[in-house]
Amino acid sequence: MELSRRGFFGMAGSVAALGWLGAPAASAQPGAPVPPPPLPIPDLPPPTAPSPLNFSSSPPLRRFVTDLPRLPTAPASGTLTAQSSTHTYHPDLPATTVLGYHAGILGPTLEARRGAPTTVSFVNSIDVNPLADAVDLTMHGATEEDRTNPRTTVHLHGAPSRPDSDGHPLIAWRHGGVQTNHYANGQEAATLWYHDHVMANTRLNVQAGLAGFYLLRDEFDTGRAGNPLGLPAGEFEVPIVVQDRTFNADGTLQPRLARYQPSGYGQGGQFGDVAVVNGVAWPRMPVRRTLYRLRLLQGSNSRTYRFAFSNGMRFTVIGGDQGLLDQSVDTDHIVMTSGERADLLVDFAALAPGESVTLVNTALNAVANAVLAVPALPEIMRFDADQAPAEPVRAPARLRGGPGLPPAIAPATTDGVVRTRVMTFLGRFDLNRTAAVLPLMGSINNLPFLTDDIDVARAGTTEIWHIVNVFPLEHPVHLHLARFRILGRQKLWSAGYMAASPPPLENGIRWAPDPSPFLIGQRAAPAPWEAGWKDTTLVESDAVLTLLVHWPSVDDLGFDPDAPIPVPHDAAGDHGTHQEVRGYTWHCHNLEHQDHDMMQQIRVRG
Image 1 (tube, rainbow, N blue to C red):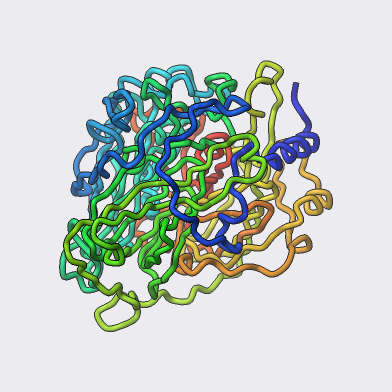
Image 2: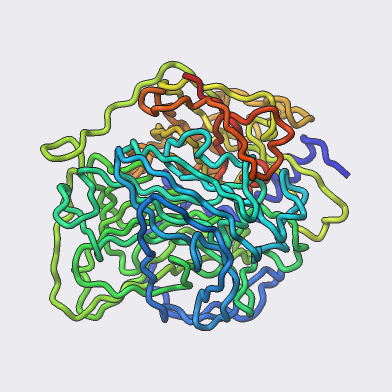
């Protein structure tokens, strides 16, 4: 049977309020007061007993017994091959099948230089899908063939790419297909990443390993010793991707949050009980007692983290999604949601010879999550200092706007366009799925992904977006092509907002009421590390996020952002039902939500 929209909102809101969807508590939110870092956590394996509600849990694994792998580096050109291979996540687990953009998990760290265009071809050579059983045929675009011959497409996250090189989710490739992307590399130095972006199966392909770093260099941030900014380089610059995973005893990934959930159906989020860093469970990293640059990618499907060190030591944030900040930020924690990047300087000279410190996650589960045993993830990885004398290096304070530095971030103005976006859920309650997680389908403005009601933006303009979240769970949001500045976050009386203007009964009718009469308190300013340009950020529960969204001009881009996307002869997907494919997407970066179906198209015209 199907529920009405009004009936569903009440039921789904109750489910979300119980914490079933795994949203972190308010302590993880950038604008909220935060507790101090905890005391060091003892090195204990996770409990072996199953949770009272039969949630999935990994077998006991020793922590910090494997060195952190250094991801291989390659030029951002040539050919990468998405393929199946075997990988061992932990010495206590058997080897298992994973996906990667080379033999092994993940992909090489690609390096490019600003102003030097590159071409990368991505070949789909996947012959075994390690998460075949988790393909959900009720999701838009999924087919039975995805179990044995999965579709792929690649999105360079954070780059203003040509329409035919952005990884549109409707255009994908099966085994033998070749996707060729052209990257202008016109933006400033930044930590970008590439990952799968196919309709309905992004969450599975990324979970299985299809992701990698893309480091863009320029004349200021060269990645070499003696760079103008005085940043650590070589062995002292370390890309680190943090993901959470759950494992079965045979080493395979367990994508289901609950064991009683039938295989092959989606869920509200994927929250693992093991921290996987650069493809290894709970690694350790030997460090010298000096300054390191950690290029941190939050690559989890759904979880939000509050990273800190177990001894409370401070570190320096020098950049975010779109590059360097004006000034470095001294802090003892940083909050990161799915898809965000942070550029950190950590001075291990503060450690005594032979001392260790653990990178921890101090975000707390909601109370109901704890009751329902949705797994917390307090430990991430350990750093072990060597016995050599300390070599303290001073972190730069100013990063922009001075002699020999890149220009300061210019104040952003608006062209007067204001848009309201409402992130909601609609659902169908299937009697055959009563044992599963309540099947939720996300929407934005109550519109499906393939709506004809598509927004149009003007290239070269800056808009104000109010992104409204009417549910007690968080959403990471990511915009393609555009970059944005965070103006602030403000709490919302969601019940009053929805009662004053109830959502339409039918999906497909735009619904985006003005939230301003229902705002609570004062708008909270962005966190200090959010001061620069970004492409991904957190929309808090029952709140409104306000952004200044800039669409680059045609002259800056060097291409027409509204050009039709040609469909290659070897492409797969449901594009054949459309006369043309145009435009870009923006979406929730909780990959379970993105797949089903919290993603919208937008066209950008010159």
